[in-house]
Image (cartoon, rainbow, N blue to C red; front, side):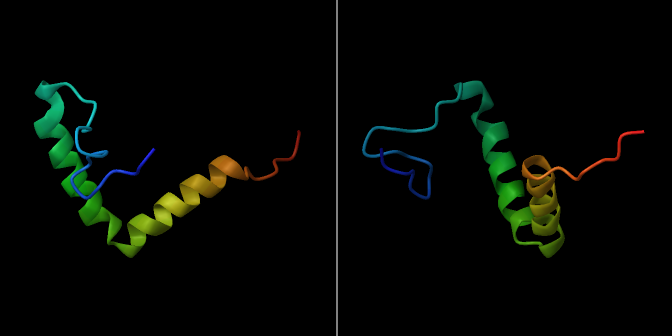
Length: 62
């Protein structure tokens, strides 16, 4: 399986598996995510979130 190119296509015929009615909203979401991804605070937030999911902190039993 090949990874998608910059437009989200897999090979010559593949595309995004999304209903046509959601394409505008998905494109808007992709643009917002790419903008947010450039911010240091957003990257730190995602890192903390993923770290907490994979390595939950120990909690004392009381």
